[in-house]
Length: 126
Image 1 (cartoon, helix red, strand yellow):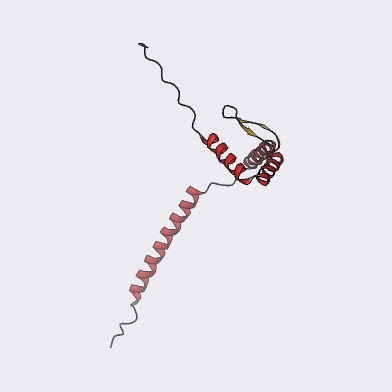
Image 2: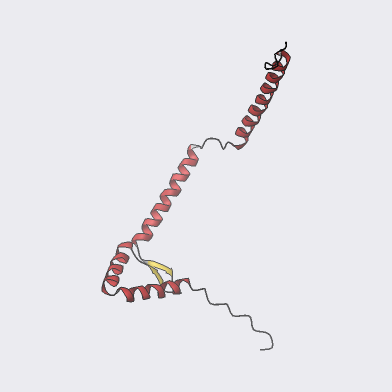
C-alpha cells in the first residue's frame, strides 16, 4: 500500500529549487534596494559644516537671550535679556497677578495683530 503522507523525491527537488530561486530573487531585490537607498557615509567636511552651523545657532541664541533689541519696532515689541525679563515678570505677577495677566493678554493680542491693510491705489477719477 502506498504512503500518501510523504512527498515523492521529484516533488521535493521541485520545491527545493523553487524555494532557492525565490530566496535568490529576494536577496537580489534586497541588495538592490540597499544600494539604491543607502545615503553612504558622511564625510568629515559634512560633519565639520554641521558642527559649525550648530555653534553659529548656539552663539546667536545666546546673544539673543543676553542682549536687548527690537523684535518689531512698528508694534513696539522688544527683546529683553532673559534674566531681566524673569525679574520683571516676578515683580509684576507678585504685586498684582490679575493686572499682570490682563497686561500680558493685551500685549499678546497686540503682537499677534495682523499688519494694517495697504491702502488701495486711488482711481484716476479721485
